[in-house]
Length: 206
Image (cartoon, rainbow, N blue to C red; front, side, top):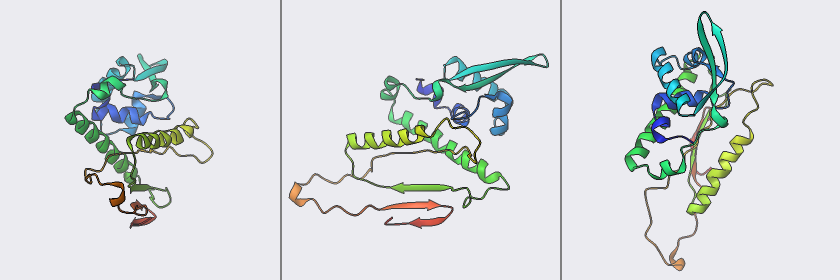
């Protein structure tokens, strides 16, 4: 578990995401993956994450008079502790979402910057759908999505596998219908959503 102040910084969030289901990396390797972050900034934020227990050192070796360390995410995953999350204000959530969205954009930009990037071949996809769910049903769905991803984590490279970033977001619709008596409820509409990706244009009713 970690505090919101530690995790919800744009640079620290990107560092942590670079280590998700990855082999341990040195600071130099992190700089290769996150080339827009200045070296001094990278070292400073890695130190903050280690001190907070978010990252851990798994190996050290001396290289030309300095100590090279390899880092991984402690325990294989990162979560904001429940008490800290409950204490977050709306502005805290706005800041957290902004950092999250910025990291998604940065990931996508870095992918497209590669000369051999081919969204169709590489299975790039971004999708959105809607469903009427109680709070309990929504929590169950989010847990199921997380379990599906975790079940496929830890496989490592090889066998044609490629590290893929999978992100999900669940937000209640801001629109709320006024309560109605059961007899007045309209019939349920068929599932509708939008699906977009390299292999298809946004569609409805799928």
